Image 1 (cartoon, rainbow, N blue to C red):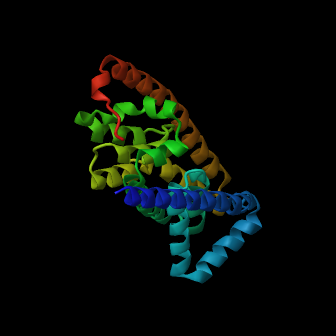
Image 2: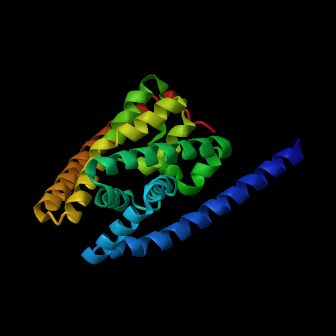
Image 3: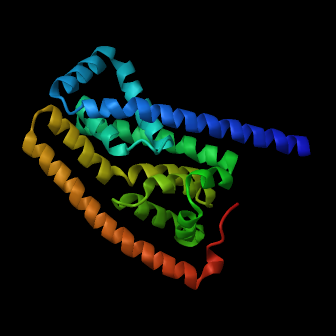
Length: 242
């Protein structure tokens, strides 16, 4: 029994080390490439390269989007803008949604395998306590949808924390994917406008995204305050999974 537990601990340690190494390497690789997109010539070059790749270029971008969800240290907005730039607003949106779905499935089963200690390695106890209201299972589905729908909420944290709750896997995958549509579509439209050199279109999309983010942050702040107050009033309803 003890030997079995030791093997499990070793497996967790190896997986966690690989996870961190891949996250750092992906960030180092992706950051300069994102910065290069400021140059119109570079944007055109990337688009031509992807078009010449055919369907494989689409799958590469899909993998990048899924990796962004799994390795949350990589910012999501540049990936979404790039998807819109390379494939257009609606095709880029579909690609992002599929990549998010795949990445969410991966995270869910990794968290289920490695448990709460894995999540605690990336997320502080303070943040976990603030989101402990998620363990009130009576209205968990609608609540998770609302948190993913509102711009400005900590979606990267939620993707790792929700698997610790009793929300059914398929419900979580669908909610965490489709509730993001409003925030994603503004980014893919902005990317498409940038490629078309539609300056006002890109400005309007970024302004809409910024406005939604500000409103979302304000709503999120009030919602979190209400839920925290409710959690303190009914601590027995927010028992945290191990």
